[in-house]
Image (cartoon, rainbow, N blue to C red; front, side, top):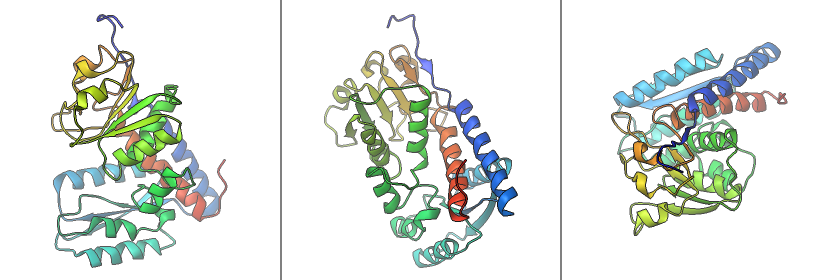
Amino acid sequence: MSAAQTAQLMDGTGLAHRIIEEAAAKAAEISRRGGTSPCLATVLVGEDPASVTYVSMKRARCAKAGIQSRHIALPATTTTAELIDTLAGLSGDPDVHGILLQHPCGPHIDERAAFEAIAPEKDVDGVTTHSFAAMSFALPGFVSCTPGGIMRLLEAYDVELAGKHAVVVGRSAILGKPAGMLLLARNATVTYCHSRTADLSAVVREADVLVAAVGRPRLIRGEDVKPDAVVIDAGYNPGNVGDVDFDTARTRARLITPVPGGVGPMTIAVLLAQTVDAAANQLGFQHH
C-alpha cells in the first residue's frame, strides 16, 4: 500500500443500526404473537458514574428496539451473596428473558460467582463459563457481546479468516479469550498476547487480523501493523482513543475500525439481538 492510500473504515455504527432494526422487527413479532415483549434485566451495584451512564444508554437502546428493560440498582454495600440472590431470582423469573450484570461490581464482590448465578439461557451478555464453553466448542449459546460484534464486523466486510494469522492482544474473560475462540472456530491461526508477552511488536507484525483489547491507549504502534492487515480496535480509553495508534495504522492496514464508531456500537447491537433471541427461545417461537 502506498503512503497515499488509507485503510477503509469499518463502520460499526451503520452495521449496528441494521442489526438493531432486525432485532426490533423480531421483538415486535414476539409481542404480537405472544402478547409479551422481550425483557432485559440490568443489574448495577453501586454508583460508578461510567457504569450508570452505560446502563442508561443500554436501557434507552432497548426502548427504541421495543425491548422492555427492568433495572435493579443495588447499593455499593451489597455482598456477593445478596447479588447472587438477586441474579438467581431474575434467572427464575419467566417475565425476564435476558440478564445483564454491569461490571466492574466493586472489589468486594466475587464477580465470577455472580456471573455464574445467571441462567445460561438468559446470559445474553455471554459472561458465564457455560457461554464460554459454547463459544469454544461451537455449541448453541450466547456469545460475549464485544467478540460477537467483532465477528459480525469481519463477516460484513467479507474478511477471509481461514488460514489467516489472527493476533489477539488481551486475554480478559469476556473479550480477549472468547474473541480468540471465535476466530479459531473460523479456522484462523490464533496467537494470544498479553502484558507478559515478550516482544509484542514482533508478534503484531505477523498479524493478518489484529484484535486489540487491552485498554491501554495506543499500545499498538501503527508502524508494527502488517501491510494490508485488518485491524480491530476494541480498546476504548479516555479522550476517544483506542489501543491502536490509529493515524499511523490506517496508512498500512486494509481495513480498520475507528474509535468511536467501530466496535463499541456493535457490542450493544449484539446484546439487543441476543435478548430478542433469548425471548424467542424461552417463549417457544421459531426464528423467522
